[in-house]
Length: 94
Image (cartoon, rainbow, N blue to C red):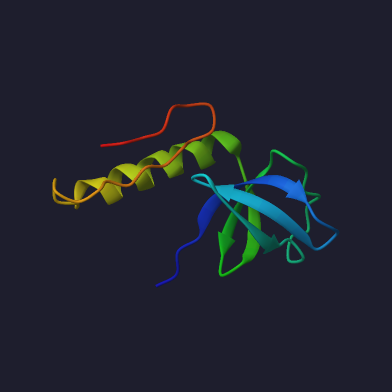
């Protein structure tokens, strides 16, 4: 099973690479597979270091929020819980 994660483009490195932010973690990803022009502030689905497609910003924020909530549901109360900073909102902690 593969999991693509929504990520916000925060820096354009060159024509084929960008830096994305996922829950406060920044990482370089290849944007070479995208047909669309990518600009800072766009959201993309990232899998294995590649941006696979652009995604609507509202849908991206909703998906990130749901992922954080789902991850936190299965954690015992004695373990640290997952935090996910959704742009435009405070960090999600459950």
